[in-house]
Image (cartoon, rainbow, N blue to C red; front, side, top):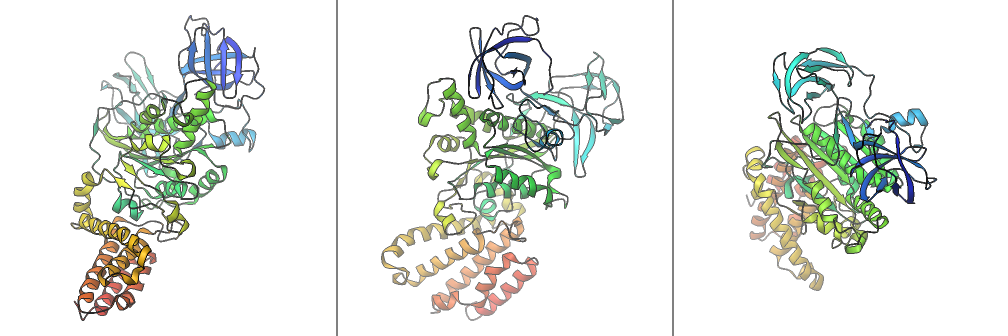
Length: 589
């Protein structure tokens, strides 16, 4: 988005919060072009940024992305003639933007800690030079999306310079060397100049050849997610939960440890202190996949709850468009939207200002369509240049009072394929991640079964099924326990309760702030769950030889198994634990 100097095309007629009505907007710079829906508008003497969201006769309905205090009827209205676009090119990684891609660190250097209204700064650095290495030569025919060269954006991320999707032709000149993002690096025979920077309207999905089956898991390092409820690369997941259940911590963990090449984190209407934690913590974190700083593969979009609501609505589109750009290079991208409830609340507020007919709980009637359009931009695809890339969208939902029957949660559940249900009673018991294993589900489990069995362990799926069976048995037995107590149960059922407790406490519980336990590799998950299954098998045999449940659960190996997940030298400690386990049950093996 660039600063423009168009002619005044109208004036403010009415202002209501973030929604302004303009009149007299007939021509754009005298060219006889009427303003269109989603055209970018500048309002008032401070040139506040807005967007046309409705046209009624000669009136423009504009949602303004900044605080409209002081704007009054009669103030000038300027049309840029372009939709809200983002700048795409080298320099996006490590950046921190607001909802409409203004670089916050650059604005801080210019204006201090507080963002003034109407302030403008280009999203990408215009002065920095990048080393460009062409991959095409003179006379080559290049189509839209084709890779014409590369530059090293970060040590572990090669930035592929692509043709704009709607541009094609024959290469007349191609240059090599150091260039800024707006200097020509390629000239086509029709005279078109190609630079390292592209612009793309945020509300228009970037094109691709075709969608592919999402048959590879996104490894998150979180045991309950990877083992019980996996999400595929190119999939969609939702994390709903009430206040204090750990949505934001889950999103942070997924951002830090998921094995996507690029991470886009959208703080959509988040509290300022939570966004501050992300901005201060991420630069200090080490990427477990490369050993480099995590920020080198991350892009943060910060739109806190005290910022204008209209920019919230734009922030998720800004994030998904940046994600699509890296997907087109053939990379796996993970997008975290925290939270889509605040996005929906922004739509509700703007809808009420427009005096539209409200739907359920005051949300606009098109809420489901908007959510669908956003989540549909996820997927694993074959790109225009023949690469395979993916965008995994993981959205948090903040239902008031933890009520999953409210419209945002219900509409999201119809779209997303993975449901990670955060549970308030679990959070109150200090069981984190507080994901309820009885109500959560993943529709990718059957698609990913082959990959997990082939790459992790041949019995991985059977271990998962065994653990879920034990947890479901526990839920049924707990109803009886609440009536008569656990001592009234037969010993085999008492043992089932103890095995379920081991699965919950030794495997499903995970400490996000522990140096070792914060991330758990798939191999470690498999070995840990297999060790618990081995213990359960020994315990079953021991029970049949008249060994009491109390004696079974008091053996030394059980305590060692509880601690082994926190050990740095996990493999050796687990081997020692299994040896002690054999010794504990040597009479029944």
